[in-house]
Image (cartoon, rainbow, N blue to C red; front, side, top):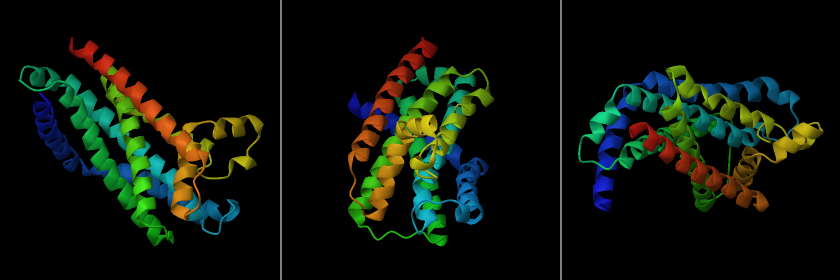
Length: 253
């Protein structure tokens, strides 16, 4: 049964990845948006923003990476909605394949596509002057956090794709996720914010994730933020996965 699941997931992931390669305009859009934000904040607003660091692009990059993921998962909800409306699910369920493999294929495709997008953003940041002297272990830790965050948000996208009534509604859920880093430590220190906004910024998941990635890339000791970030990611993943499975079963029952 396990081999059956992995085999089915691999085949369906290959199918889903082909759709991604045929929609390069969508991929470019998800990459261009965060890159444009990075260029805007570094070269237009950077001189007026005090982040307590000599390199604003280094300060900014972790938040831009999270925005890249939030932009990318909208495509997952979009593709899932189209498959649902096009009757693909019913066709798959008439075949001897593991039912959960359909969802996991979309999740793994999202992970691959987002990792490529993140790599492109980091390369652009390097061209803009970003430098990090940390070793392989720190980069692996950053990659692990980004993968966990991507998978957690992708399962949220699965819920949106299965529940949406329209194509626009399927992808619109990502807008608040894209906006969330703006009310965090992603662009400016939370100490500069007024009371209620500062409280929200310091107690939402993006701030702890951004701080952890920033410290890792700077070679600084990572404190409690890392454990808080992991707790947020795992918590979102568990809840989103459970709700996605419940929603999926209702749709196909």
